[in-house]
Image (cartoon, rainbow, N blue to C red; front, side, top):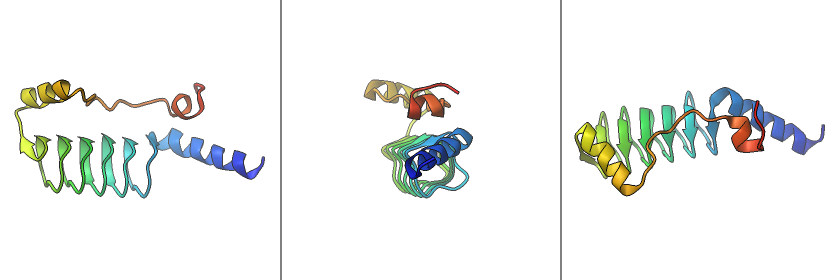
Length: 118
């Protein structure tokens, strides 16, 4: 095994057990994509410096948030877009209108990163 193969195997094992991809400096996160410097964030993508949050998309410095998109600096928010609160129904209608896929589902890390199933 050369160094390149070693690093590929390390990435595969890490991804297989955390269900994350394209992430850095996260702790306790699961099923996240393109998240940076997050702690205990789940089912989210493109989050930066967010903590204890679930189902957030394109958020920065959000804490204790759930179902938020394109938000910055919120604390304890739910169903927000651009830092504005919506009803649950309006939140999903707005995401649909924007063409945003809000459903961050668990993915097959081997298929996504290496082109083959586990």
